[in-house]
Picture 1 (cartoon, rainbow, N blue to C red):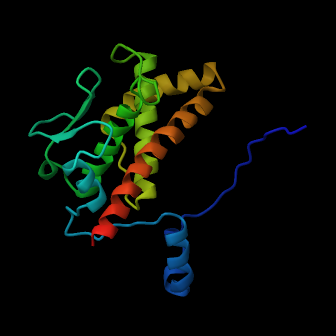
Picture 2 (cartoon, helix red, strand yellow; picture 1 turned 30 degrees about the horizontal axis):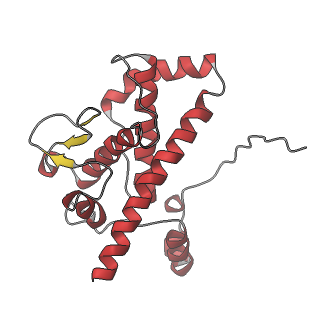
Length: 201
């Protein structure tokens, strides 16, 4: 019989060590092997070419439009992601992190991962979907070598997340499975855009 168990290890992020200075060749190898794709910064507003290409050429599962405004959202009925304009964000990482969050929501559409259900704003179901989107965004940012900033409006959901976790120990496993599936869809699309750009070059 096989019995799964959870084991916790205390580890350090490689950038919390002196590996880069002490053993630069090993540092570079580890970064490359673990999906490290830290983007070249152009001031604070750097551009992530693969994502720019995806949005410009409509290569995601739904259109991603930038409009001058204060809100970012995924419209289930219109199958459309709306983001504020790039210049409205404090830096490039904030823009792409927000884009990944809304892209995560779009993966839940019926024809894809069939995760999105009608839910009232502030409900437990709504909070759960927000958690999936935030964790997916964090995972994709990490995969792409970007820093992830937690959205300020995610804080109020913490109470709901903790309450759900206390009621059902399986809650986090369900969330993480959804996050894994959503982030896989996004990273696959990014890799396809990256490889196409390399071929074109």
